[in-house]
Length: 414
Image (tube, rainbow, N blue to C red; front, side, top):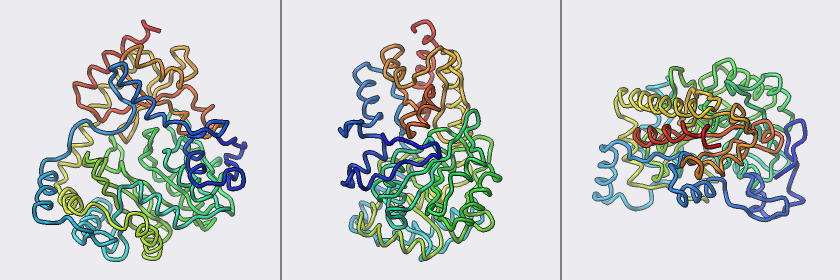
């Protein structure tokens, strides 16, 4: 792992680590101190879960399919012959559906021909955007903890990864520390809202500060909003809807989280024409185009009635509460998330300071697997989050009830 300075800046690695794959691995915390390539914590925990028969609440993917009408639309599209390349920027029906979705939920009006791009999941949208916009010497600011692909792509681009901490219990940034993280080299502010892994939903005053600072330093805002419909009692506010944001913001989302079709890898981004054109230039040499029959099916999904969208959030909230009860019974300090399908706990009330160690023991102790939060951080942030664990609750209710019952026995097994 890179050594972090107190300013929250990782060192420039272009000179010491030459190959792009090494920079990507370093950025995602996959290189050991001796430069050896390690496995991701997700792979390690999944392997442990399988070997112990544990319930895997580590990796964040649903264990049941999304709406039947979306599946049927994909099958119909395949049967109808929609099996060749889609246009590079996406089929018109899906671009129009994304535009209609942004208008319906947020009053935004991106032009489907010039201001929307369909991508191979949000992951490609993030990668293509960063590769289009940053270069060695630039700084990319993310919040910390951060989704691991951010660090990987920032490293691959040769840029410097700067972080601003999200602090318990609400996991919102200290605005003075956020301002300190900006510099004249800040090229992109990469926001994830609602936030994985903390479950924070950023309120308007925090978003407004990000816009103000991005404008002051001439930075582009890249907003990963894949959990936009998974919030609990608080509204999701797209940062591009704030005054002064639209001309400098790329907004990213996907079908995976909203519709529970993570394997289809259909994502999209919207923003001003000149930024979307820049990203499209890179995207066409990554995948060129993305899953043709799935695109028309997701267009069907985006047109589902409001009851669908309110229903998925209500169901998820119920699942959150089931798991939270078991985690509290286990003796953890529980941070109830306001969005996403992740819940974080503090192991310190159990007298355990090292969540990585507990994560490795948990499948054997109680038959449940989780992910330690420090793996989503640079070393300084890892120290700050040392006792935090993340659990995913995007699973069937009976699975969560069983996991909660197992977790409730933890105190007696330690």
